[in-house]
Length: 344
Image (cartoon, rainbow, N blue to C red; front, side, top):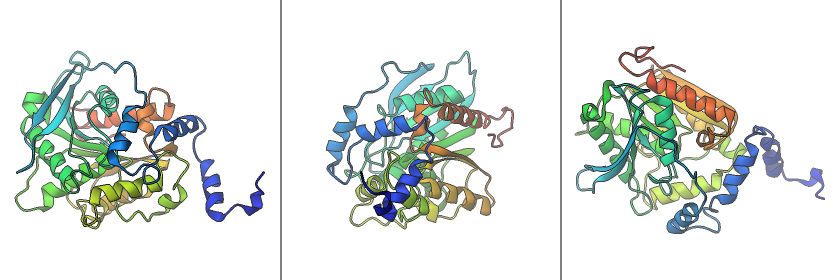
């Protein structure tokens, strides 16, 4: 047996940090880590990583929603159309008009797709009663920064122009995303506000779920949560390399929204997990919004890990977080119980 006194400081820090994970979440974090490719280690090719994830087991029966439609919407100038999947809520349970959520999936800008996030999109549609437009943006390294940001912005503009067709409340357009998708959600708002020639639709709320917001990767949570919690600092390093490439500017606010000026952005609802390398940048973004006079709510889960919201069927904390998130999105309706104010 290894002498505990001989353990290095870094290893000891990881061992102590492991105690912070909720015991109910530990089996799921370990199972996900076992299925996930060793990015930046044994696996360095994006296509190989995608094949590994595609072979992983998935939910046998997708949760029912009112209707699901695959379509393509116009992409950015000179770019191909953007695939989207539109989820409509059950009209008997959720009579319209409803909020409309433009949702950008995670996967480090490399791995996620419409099929891989189908269960998450359905869960969010069911929890909020919103029309959910899931964005099939171009992925890295085949299409590096800022291609995905421009795709997300194009879909946001399309959704804003087609709210009546979608059954959406014109006052309740929401942009949302998890992980790298949270980055794209925030960046699309900066693109709409700051860049000449761009003017996006009015957005009632931005929902950022354990978002990746800073290419610097130098926060305390990057060190304290570097490994042992499914998503690792090494994974994130590889993701950023794929996304930016050798010439990408990680300091550009469209790549690192935490570096942008948050004044005038829509209200925010930010979900963070305590055992996540990305925790600190999500919290920092929340506080920057507040400092700029933008309303923001931070929903913090100290004992959870990155990706926990996808486990709402088995983890009580995830189930509660999803229900709260659904209520916040629902509250953006013009005739909602909070008249468009952030709930939760």
